[in-house]
Image 1 (cartoon, helix red, strand yellow):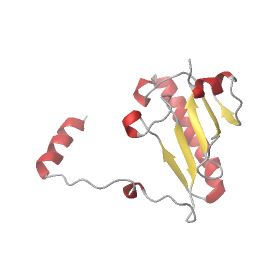
Image 2 (cartoon, one colour; image 1 turned 135 degrees about the horizontal axis):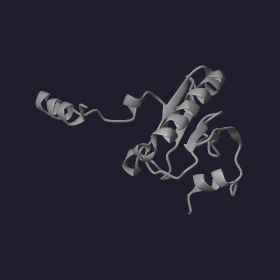
Image 3 (cartoon, helix red, strand yellow; image 1 turned 90 degrees about the vertical axis):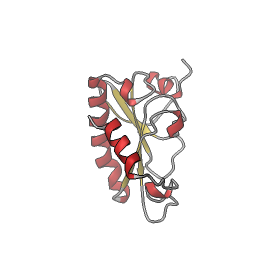
Length: 134
């Protein structure tokens, strides 16, 4: 497989591993957006979060929870980001969670600064509500 994250998990590509669990690993991002930018990934190759088994999902997000506490010590605030699919901005088709220390000095803003807001009618909101409600 030609997946960079699978190569990191196998040791083919060296990385600064921070913590390893049964199903997941965390390591420093090789191309950090800020100092301390950390990735948390499942060891097995899965394209999207919904492809993970319940056990892998629980393990991954338990490690995310643990690592946020560490990453948050850098600036006191951490952006947690997941691009779940190509159209969502996922560049590597392997589930990965970004933990990015944030500060007032960085160039990023809130999530609403990333998008032009859409205007939805009450009917459209109701349609979405009915489609997504479980």
